[in-house]
Length: 130
Image (cartoon, rainbow, N blue to C red; front, side, top):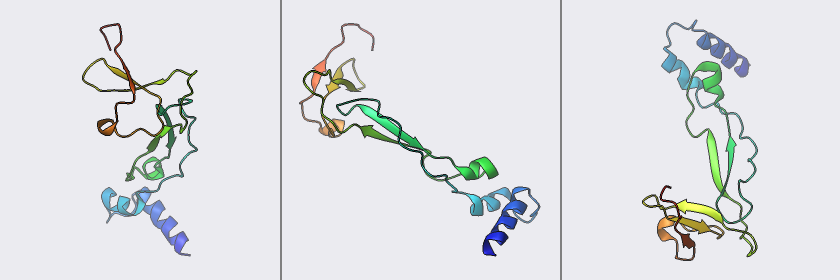
């Protein structure tokens, strides 16, 4: 019975028959209705730790009622957790953002860039453009 009451309120609020409520007040009760997360996407790399995988969710409140949801619609993770073998090339890793230097990353679960030990291989591209 309580669910039926909420559904009636939802219907009335959505089509604005409840004149005493502003859209903002309506959204206080309708916001943050998230769909479940999708399955993770396939990892974009076979080894090293340069790959990315993502999963998404929809804010049903936004779609059906125009009310916002708190939090991210996309979740990203670094992958895979597998070291590159000697016969596989390393993946292109992070750029330091200040020059054309590219670091090749063959590691598993690297430290944050500022704490990374000098175990990555650094190369400088032959072309002048990044």
